[in-house]
Amino acid sequence: MVTGYASALVVTLVVEAAVYGVGLPRLGPVSRRTAVVAGLVVNLVSHPVAWFALWPALRAVVGRGPAFVAVEALVCLGEWAALARWRPFDRPLLAVMVLIANAASIVGGAVIA
Image (cartoon, rainbow, N blue to C red; front, side):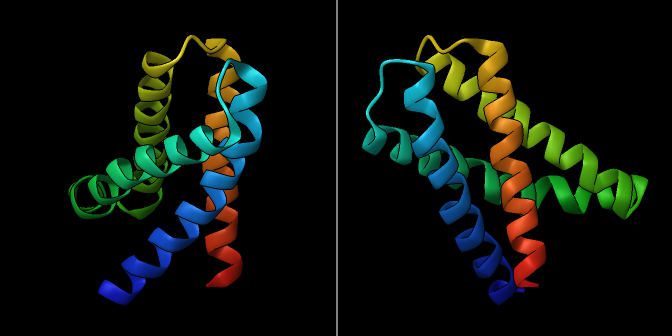
């Protein structure tokens, strides 16, 4: 289980930090380096919560498919809220970027798996 978690975390950090590093500077006054760090921070908070708390709890109640969708939606909402509070980004565009970052990490994880 730890190996699966570690691999998922690494893929998430690499992919999402890259997406945020490219995208966030286009949305507001932030350097690429700071944007990458922000991507790492939001994921270092959201990933363990999703993996160890939300996923097991929701999967037990609603099953794998609905739990996956719900967990991803909650993660996106949390990352969006944290980034929106941190800087005055255009919120609808930030929501699109968060969705792209999370979709990219899902795809990256599926390709590696």
